[in-house]
Length: 356
Image (cartoon, rainbow, N blue to C red; front, top):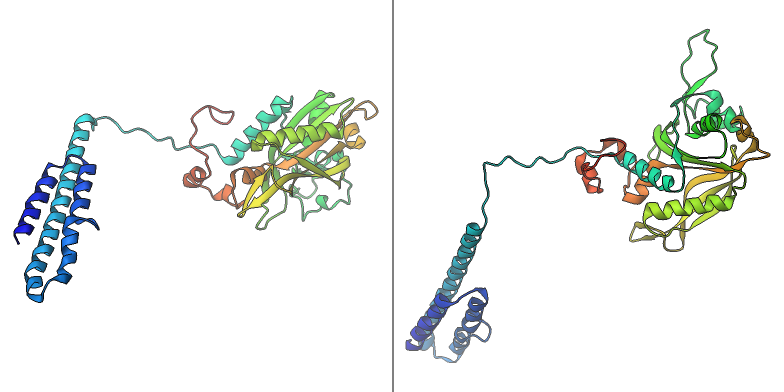
């Protein structure tokens, strides 16, 4: 029992004099660690007679509990002292007004539209705009879309209501921003380089389609433009937009307003269910393109014997989903600030063409 009293006095003194967390931990290990002095004494209980254990056992357990409690109390005192020192060094004026948190954000569609416009501007394309309610001629005829084309049926296109006896030409909610290209050709002539971003409307209503979405189309007309120029422009755009070198693959297709026409795929891979653009051996279709059809040039007042060029069109909503990992198209219409912040669309900090 005398040895126990000596251990008690020894370790209570060391606990009281320990300076800092490391010193206190050293005391704990020396006393209560696997090879600690008190722990080794506890192992000796097995060698004692029952009578000796009856006396030594409770005494050692009591010592162990007392030293452990002293260690915890000293640790708490150290923490309190550290907090006091920190409070002395730091102070807060509670009378100051709170910092206002910016709440408004630019919508992903607007942000991606601006990103695309800025990239194409570096390549000499300016933004062109046109009405969302178009004549049947601008939306279809001027783009070489024949009267029997499925897009001209009411199950594909929103036609404006006409009262009985109103014989004006049909008007539609534009199904693409291609009419803007015709208007730009008529207004500016050739050579020309424009992009036409904006809302478009189609009778598509299912899980992956909405009746109103957004497109950005491009048009470049000059005397010696080729498909090679088109491929370069698109690869430069995708590389700048996704922030990595992106290869493209052209597949022959058919569009009434271009000839030859091509679907364009971008290089990608899927890793753990996540899309990675610009790497791997996979391909994803992202847009349609081609050389502008001579009939379209004529409708725009351009002589196809002198001028030629390319056009392309892609969905802005889809480009936003691909870049920012947004899985559901409906999120664009049901989003709130928490959703926007989750995908990295923070509150507006600087003026843009949409807010300033």
